[in-house]
Length: 139
Image 1 (cartoon, rainbow, N blue to C red):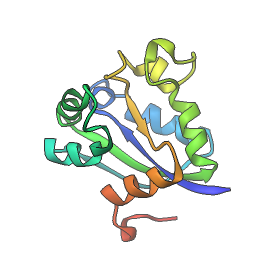
Image 2 (image 1 turned 120 degrees about the vertical axis):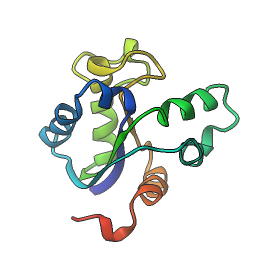
Image 3 (image 1 turned 45 degrees about the horizontal axis):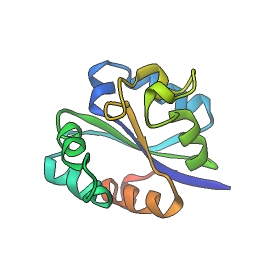
Image 4 (image 1 turned 90 degrees about the vertical axis):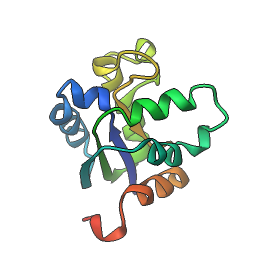
């Protein structure tokens, strides 16, 4: 089933200069970037994006981190894109991520974990729409 998912290369991975390597991993796995841009989220934009976590204790530090520097946001398209991207990313905590995953290779800890990916079709719909109007998606 062809679907779309949002991926974010977070500020820590951008600072490490591994944008190209991460995008290459997506493409090698059969996921096609159909929209891509670099942004620097304000804290309020990060708070809106992560609003689902507002009651969690890590909410403020997550939003501060996500607004600490540029990120690359992408829409990936492919067969079972959501599941495939989740497998590529690995566990949220890089220390628990399988070798060969993006987070194992580039994450530092549970907060500075290099990438974000949608976890369901409903979440993907919200997240893609948050950053990309339809006319910015090609594919």
